[in-house]
Image (cartoon, rainbow, N blue to C red):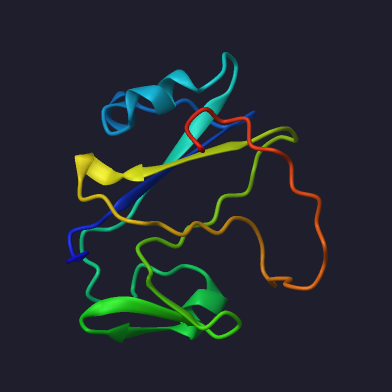
Length: 140
């Protein structure tokens, strides 16, 4: 039932380029409105073809993912979770400062639950990190 699901990720922050007109047309208006003056954004979109794991760009994800039921599949052994891998991208920020992420269904597509992991490997499941309170009006 989730075969048509595709996601887009908009990364907003200082030093990033301006979106092209074509990119802007594929971003939700609320997300575009959230780009502060003087900042830019980068748009990543999951590929249409999800029948392989060829879209994976990250070594650890490539090693941990396989094709299962015709989709790129990831089994995370620590929590024993299983998920379809719709996107795997790397962006090195261009300037220090606050960066924001907007994750949304691509092209007004099917709604689904989405897991989003940010930042670098290796993962650390044991260090206690202070988590800031969410100030996003869309975060719930």
